[in-house]
Length: 134
Image 1: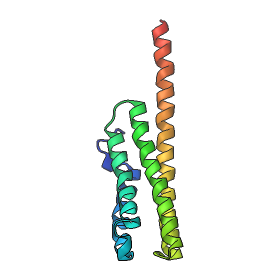
Image 2: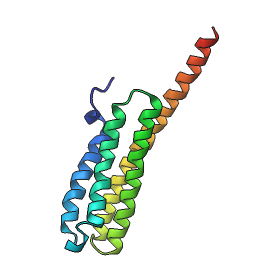
Image 3: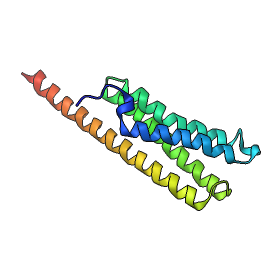
Image 4: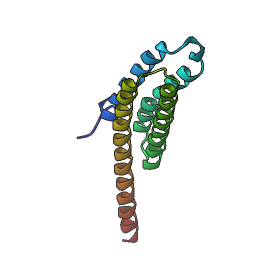
């Protein structure tokens, strides 16, 4: 089954929803965090589905991987921001666990997707070498 849009990717759907939830969550942060932690959390959360969408539109294995790796890096950045938000008591332990679970699921799907792309890339390279020898 060939996907026609990045919106069909479960990892994009989950990261898009997370981005919206983070935007709502940071509205509850203290006003002095509006342009600091809240802004950084919003930006890193938005970067995840954006990188996935851009990677989906790339045609070469390594190009796809580059953008999916950027999405994963943004996810790790967001996890760090959540640690800071928890330590500053901007979010509860329950909220923290909820978002950690969501981010772990996205991370798992992203890593799995990148592994599949690497596998396809490596198989393609083997086939290409075998064909060029003939």
